[in-house]
Amino acid sequence: MKTIDKPDEHEFQDNEPLFAHLMPDDGLLLDHLAINVQNTKSFILSLPADKLMYRYAKDKWTIKEVVVHMIDMERIYCYRILRFARNDNTILPGFNASDYISNSGANSRGVTDLLEEFEAVRISTIQLLKGLSEEALLRSGIMNGYPITVRALAYHIAGHELHHINVIKERYLS
Image (cartoon, rainbow, N blue to C red; front, side, top):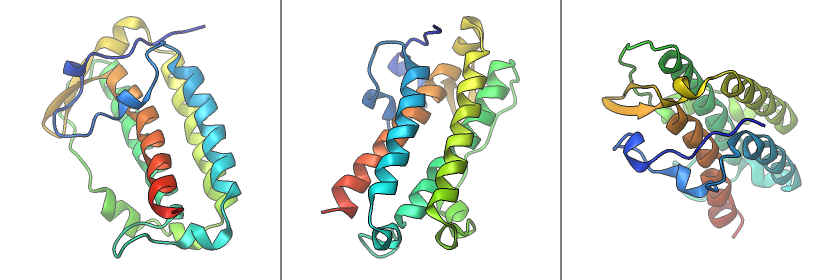
């Protein structure tokens, strides 16, 4: 069983929320990633269909758009993981999540299709992380102007999912 230790706070970039604090400090990141995607799928599928298109405020995303955002972010972060783990020192830019969502077509897709894509991306994420050495997990790069380690990117993916599930529970279902 591969473990990935939780990164220190200095391994994260300064301009983003620290979502990794939502993850246990047990090193079982790969297990959590696998379990959480199943929990997320079950949770989203349990919601009434009309809630999937609900916005809790003007200009906020629908739940379908939140799912696509989690998919997009995970793909982008895995690309960054790959670059930095392979010791690529290219400075990587940030991205505007709202622009991605406005061009995603999320609301015209079926929820099952979205969740299948999310699970496929997660399986790929887990496989990528499984193949990384301890040395590769500790490598770092510059992302959006800030340094970050590979394992911090991995923990950010996991915590980001939990953050959005919490937001859905707090703001979309109350």
